[in-house]
Length: 425
Ligand SMILES: [Zn+2]
Figure 1 (cartoon, rainbow, N blue to C red):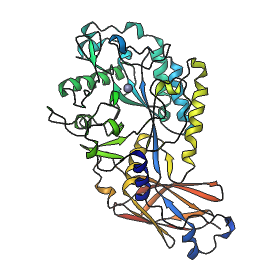
Figure 2 (cartoon, helix red, strand yellow; figure 1 turned 180 degrees about the horizontal axis):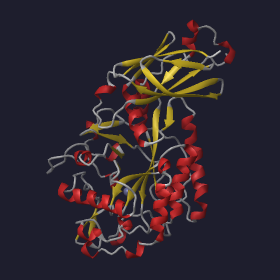
Figure 3 (cartoon, rainbow, N blue to C red; figure 1 turned 90 degrees about the horizontal axis):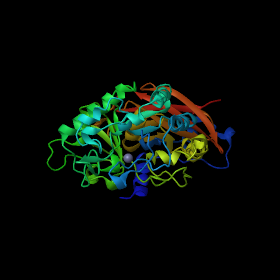
Figure 4 (cartoon, helix red, strand yellow; figure 1 turned 180 degrees about the vertical axis):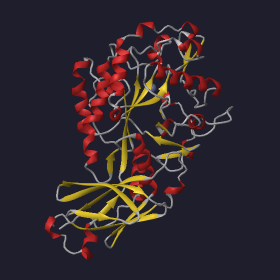
């Protein structure tokens, strides 16, 4: 199934019910509760999460022609301002972009000497040229902006080296077969240790496989899946394009699948190629992920990074204004909302919005799905009450001739819930 069909299916299954907006009637015409139903529509919007790959390099060089990693390909070293660009994107949109980070060049103590297959230098690994004040400066940027920057595991060196030569990629080979788990455990341990070296906190709980080499489920010669290995370390979620994921047909819910409790989400196609610097993004985000690579957000001259960031803000902001989509504020909200978008049924009847969680409760993800967002449109402003779901917050904005309400909800039971609406008068 292609991506567009996914989208269509997902919107159908989240059931926009109701007569929609009668274009010519203005706000004053809402009238009695009895007639309100026809003018109200409710939706569980598709969440969109921003994911940037290949963050973390200090060298910008694409070294793939001489057995060094595919880095970002930008013709300069990376600088703290390149991290600030991610934060600024997050602040402007009220989101927490996920930086899928390669940490090898943050290794202050050359611990990767002892981690097999992790670098082109093997046990001669020497990272001293990348150890300097920029590490602390950048750690401060990340730690002072936790609401707008999430570190996601991408890898140590991005590729897999044997005797100084690499194959793709670090976590799985070209056939999607997981690398030996005993070694991958060492890679995860080293990742956690480099996080600690730099005061970046604990091992993250989200993952983007490098070079998108990944399989859904257990692969040949292994007794557990990569998802299981990650679940054992506290991860809850993997983001990767299903077009290149092996065994993607086993993903149960179209836009995502659950693999050993790990929500594995289809990234779809990025708007720009991985090596486009100073990108001019164009086109539509057709699924739950706005994927890009770090240089797509950056300028050759880091002082001009904000110009590129502004273009992405302009492209993404409208998705918050639509009833059927929203920008997720972080990856936890993202996972919950995607499960509800796909599995929770919403229906407007009389003066009630009915939510049915009977499929959602069986989704099988490690991460809980207690919270969700619905968007409700009407020509007039509505007020909402419920006895069986908690309305954490409600806000509204005028979009053209109607009012789009956004309700953040917290489930109190997992069968279903009803929300009563009436015209605010
Ligand atoms: Zn990558």
